[in-house]
Length: 182
Image (cartoon, rainbow, N blue to C red; front, side, top):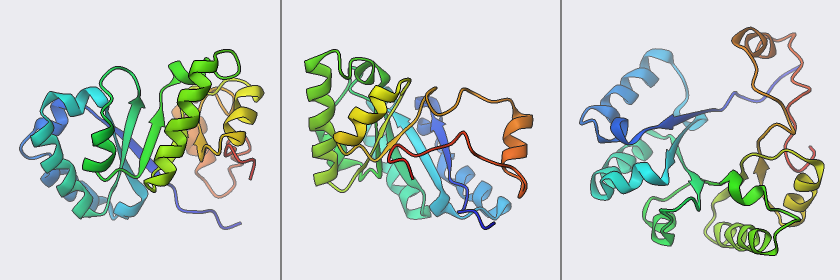
């Protein structure tokens, strides 16, 4: 059966983002691998953006010109600036596990997630809930219109041999399910 293209998400550290040749290395890697940049997302933590906002903005704008997507990781963990959502032209906003842990137990955490999702949707940004561990969390995230979810509820970390098998035509990615159940 035909499978959709594999999307890769890579964490980028503050140190990598600050390297003068980061964009050149990324462009060279994409060219050598033949990978479609549209299937690559760079995940940047809020802390990495705080390291040097002006330089980060310039680097991320250049990455965007290569055709890659941008995700803000661990949103809400201490350095949040709503201006980042506009300034960095993000594709994905990853809601930190610390908020997801309180879903259904903490009115405050549930309210924060609800409004972060609403704000992101209004800006055209896809939302991803991190650290989802229970069916109750999945149900609540669906009711809040969260786009995607990741965490132990869907699959625990797998060794390379299992991932390699899942990526072959005969592999069965039955452990992977989107938050909307499709």
